Length: 266
Ligand code: ATR
Image (cartoon, rainbow, N blue to C red):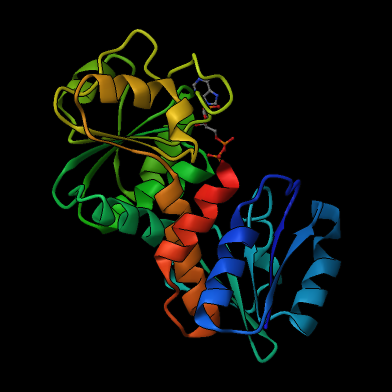
């Protein structure tokens, strides 16, 4: 079974490590290749995928751009407008989005409730789109906040969720049950926080979807304040586990995937 990942650049992807460990643990013959694909080579790459691959993952900057090359989309991929997993069903390419259900799985695994909970999503980019869609579908009361208000307004209108003005943000922060950072603030700079000068939730859990959470100031501060926290590694593992199941029909050993990812991050 030939599997792989399309994106550009792909220097830091943990997906090969996750999937190779899962294949081995399941006793399946297969490979998972890194397929660096600048957007201008996407057409040729998709021909190769159609000819040779059972399935592939898709990452930045191709999750939206790949859609015109697919034959079918799952309802979720259609609604989110982004594909992170492609299944090749005998030459018919079907696009899925496992980021959204993978995010909910990561909350469930951590024992963090979302149904009927007040969820505040920071950001309005591609990552916010999947997270907000998933939370809304899971029955949360979702509010979006973004530095560029118009982007949050457009996304909120599209998904049917609420949007916060800067004036409304402090109260919403204090009273939310779940705060999810999907912005890139804090990803590279361990001293930056998306809450610069604002208060943390009083009792809500704090999630940051970057997968090196010990490095983010937001999660360090939330933990120090006694709040429950969750980083992005579980989301990464679960979106991979759901993709693996689509390709192979087999539920992977998630513990093996966690161990492989942690070993690669060390
Ligand atoms: P992704 O697909 O990973 O979500 P993106 O579409 O580039 O990436 O979105 C990045 C998000 O981080 C956006 O919500 C962006 O806010 P803007 O829409 O205002 O650009 C947010 N972001 C990035 N840098 C930021 C900063 N310094 N302060 C606040 N928000 C920031």
